[in-house]
Picture 1 (cartoon, rainbow, N blue to C red):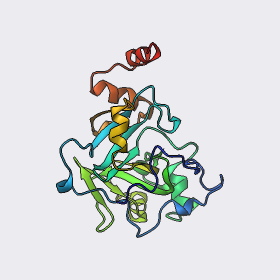
Picture 2: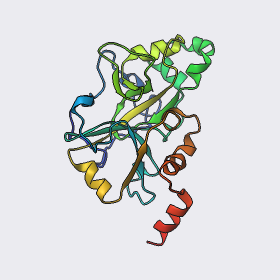
Picture 3: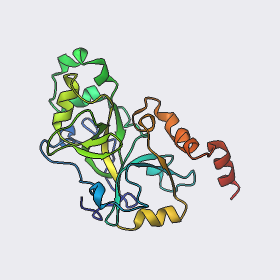
Length: 238
């Protein structure tokens, strides 16, 4: 993975919710055969890094793109960090509509999609590379040279193969589709954490793939023993 070109804290003129019908050809979302940004190998990870964990925005987060965000960290090393926001839905974008616009299925076949496919949520994964799609999914699905194992049964795939498999009912048991990702240059995330911009907690399937998206932020805070109402009140009196 190449870090530092664009980071999650820098301005990005691209609106992550702008897809076909709103100024962008959604066919650019997935590029068949082009792999996702590659996390560092687990062997290269060092103690203290957060890959495979959840990053939680403090209520005082000043960047509205990350306000009340919960991010699954796909990679975190001395070279930087990369993650997918799992609780910011992409407005007015349905997974089935993306399948049609990407020519994965014809419009007439939407009614025949497996129920599981209809349940795949589309997220604003972050402000970087928002023309690309990333599927964060359970490890029961794997495509050689395309799927990147991350941690604890979670993988990342960014090619059309996984969308075709989901449409056939042969995809992973759990999945979310994200437009774009969040990225940090070397040392940037550590600095933001030291400035009380972020908290973190262990990842679990419900935080990543759970259907109750609005509840994920409070659930993540509760995992580390923090009540959202109390934290917001304290921040207001700071």
